[in-house]
Length: 241
Picture: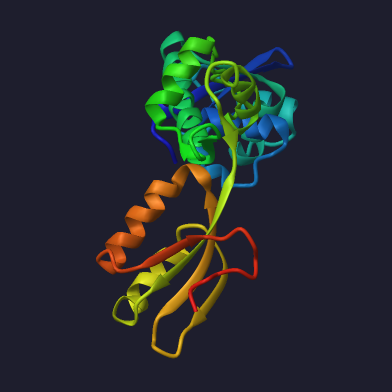
């Protein structure tokens, strides 16, 4: 379950009665869209249905039966969310907007590069300033992934930017290969790997272009700076044999 501080109220008025439930705001939106596939118990603040959640008042069981055909809260809660309205305070809205703003900045910074600077990553601070200059307003009630394209459209007149991926081949010397390869393979999508006769490990990893500096930092850390890296332009050209 989530804490009361994290929850918003979903309210439904039906059959002459009011029903309220306390739920995580993102989960509530996913449930309304029919996109939620998680555990309901993990995204609610109370396994209960209220007449007035702020006072803890509960509706009569007869009202629950009349409106939903059951008194089971776990069956009623999704119905209240889907059919009702999500109530948020001004403070909750500000907090949700700030949280989604940070998520949006991080998402763009992870995936975006500057095509005018040899595809160098854009630091989050630059993305943040550019969003402010572009006047982009984050919608606190919309998933971040649904706002990325609109944000990019507004960013392009302000900074050179595009989403891209990097395919990187890395060779770890034998004395670092055992533990090092486990961390490298978790960084992105491992496309190929080979153990060489000398005990070294070669892997080809695909990851968001904005994480290129992070990848270099990781490789240097796990190999004490002795790894070799190469951007792969052609699937057959690893160049580390």
